[in-house]
Length: 121
Image 1 (cartoon, helix red, strand yellow):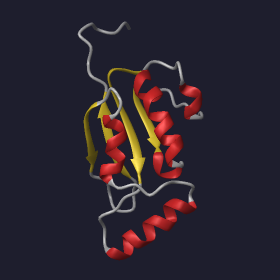
Image 2: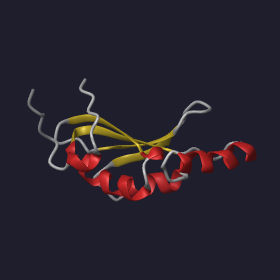
Image 3: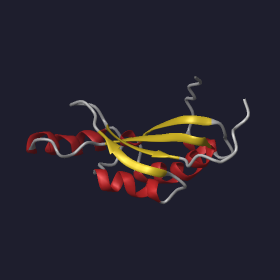
Image 4: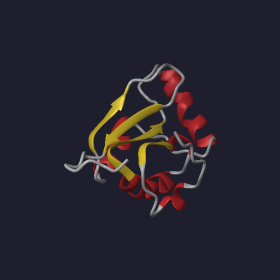
């Protein structure tokens, strides 16, 4: 495993990710939208992109607090449909949201289709 702490804007031309985590809940929407296509393209065949987003659908109090907390951390409040939509605009398939524990970010996932030829290595 290699952890890369880098600006996703610098990932153009990168290759070789089996899994890419993108903490979208703490980044502005334009930055996340701009990052998705190059990060998706950098995935190995069969690799997964997992962007985190703000969670809605809790109690009315939880939902009322989520929006200002997300904005205070520099993110954009996003519901499940809005989190999945940009993944559908990339090469990714199997796009869906996944359950997460209370207090954790919500996550969406998308998988790069497997190629018919095995990857080297």
